Length: 290
Image (cartoon, rainbow, N blue to C red; front, side, top):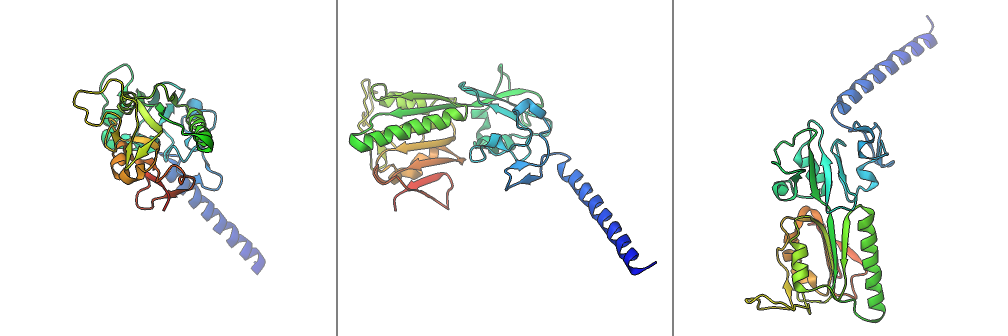
């Protein structure tokens, strides 16, 4: 046998061994999950194991919205965000609440507050395979003031953009304009059991929301036209935006309303928030200004 034939034979054996090893590894890796993900393509290399139940894209990741959804295993069906107050989800065998919490950017420790079993019943741990649960799907945009001139028009554009983005995600978005927004309305929206995202546009000072209409103040309310930075939501929500001057001064307090996987936007001044800065120490915060 000549050297050329020997080298060809060795090459074939080596190639076969590599292919067999690769196939075996692929079987191990993908036996329980869609684990092979192509970051440049932004998609999985295997078909979705639940088929078309979660949409027409058999290879897509997080409904092509990776900044809003995380789905490492690709097995939870949903959430079906269709403009309703809550969105339906259904788990496959082996799914966990931790995976769902990461997918929708809520805290798993608070699942008893944000997860509900459809039709009532207990939210079991682990979740029951095949059972339908619901998760928050409501967003509020409350505007107490747009200001005047160019800034007013700019803030209108901001509101329209936020509303369009959230409606595009399939959220039920409720916009409340200047004549409807009062202190009581804002607090009721923040305390909504179905709340997923929240946006406020209006006046602010020293970390508080100010100059709010309050036609029916509570008897013991010492600040009838003000909402100070503090905890108002029933659980940490996925996103909160406060387009009001100097809310950054109490960003630490407004953070109480946002999950550990969620995001908070506060601003230094209404004219200086055109450039958002990421806080490397806490991914929940978008901060403007220096």
